[in-house]
Length: 182
Ligand code: IMP
Ligand code: MG
Image 1: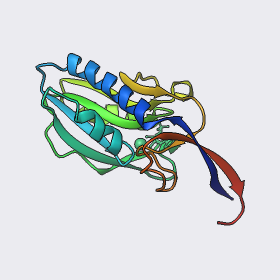
Image 2 (image 1 turned 45 degrees about the horizontal axis):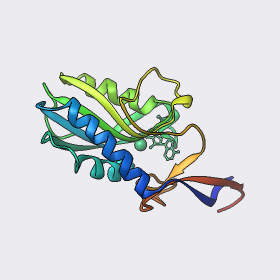
Image 3 (image 1 turned 45 degrees about the vertical axis):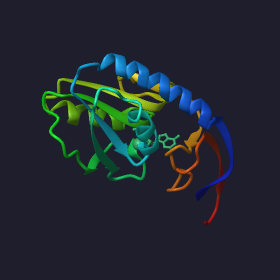
């Protein structure tokens, strides 16, 4: 069985995303004024959101990148998560902001909160482009959420389906077809 995308419907335009990213950056700038902040980009999905967000930061953050992979399943939501690229900066005594594309069940973010939280950070918060709050199985709150979307598979603006659609400037919901073969 294969899943095929047969249609994309725009949920948020590039302009709407830009406006929302500006609002989030303004709140983050207020909250981190005068603090030594490290923003962590969760690759690959968050790359575009991260690039647009940090360009508006005025607290002089350090930036670092990490990547996760799942193991024993083909979805990060399968429950077992590993670093395939860890952070490189020291996070000790710093205010860390994790920047993620989507928080869905929260399994991935819970793993990150546990791992990064164990590195003697001064504070730890989450910014996510999309908060699928109704699908949450883990107890966690997204501190800075771009948009709340509770259904559908989302692509564009960094988010992919099988490596595709990341380049789209808007956020789209994908209509999936169940087919046989490839
Ligand atoms: P979670 O562990 O269930 O919170 O989901 C983890 C990851 O699954 C997210 O960081 C995304 O990379 C991916 N994901 C979840 N929903 C979507 C979606 O609608 N589109 C693209 N990726 C998604
Ligand atoms: Mg992700």
